[in-house]
Each structure stands twice: as C-alpha cells, then as structure tokens.
Length: 113
Image 1: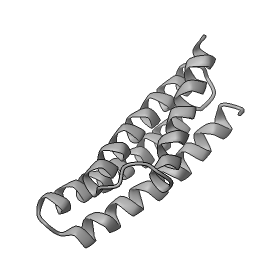
Image 2 (image 1 turned 60 degrees about the vertical axis):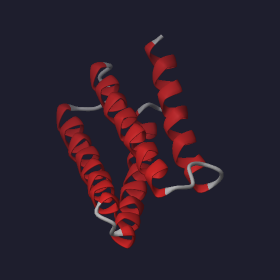
Image 3 (image 1 turned 90 degrees about the horizontal axis):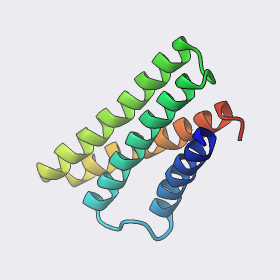
C-alpha cells in the first residue's frame, strides 16, 4: 500500500514538472504555486523513503537540505514577484524547477522505479 501511495506521489510530481513545460500554469504566480506543491510532494516522498529504509539517515538529511534549497528559491521567486521584480522571480523559479527535476529523478532511483 505504501509503495502504491509513493508511486502516486512520484507520478504527481512528474506530472507537475512536465505540465509546467507543456500546458501547465501560464502565469508566474501559478507556476510558483505549482512549484510549492511539488516541493511539498518531495518532502513527503523523502519521509516515506526514510520510513521504508530506502534511504539512510545521512541521505535523508542531504535530501531535506536539497529540498530546503529548492523551497528557498521558490520563496525568493514569490517575494521577487510580489515586489515587481519579474526577471529575478523568473530566474529564481527556473532554478527551483531545475532543482525539483533533479531531486525527483534521484528520489525515483531510490524507490527502485
């Protein structure tokens, strides 16, 4: 059951990232909200992998740090957008998106998919 739930989370994260590049949210604010949902999914996946013994404690800490870095980029993007600095918001969101893609790919390997 837990494996099925984790598979659904991975699929959701992959879908979120893929949709962003295809027909996903078009506004910067929508894309930021999508990224927030994706990083939340990553945190949950890290917790699930740790509970199932698929990652070590050290790996878990590193992955949490990576997710925190992505989250910080998302928050910078949001603050920049709210402050009217569209170029910085877009750059920060691009950085966050690349981090999410890399994080998701690594998490997928640890789940054996």
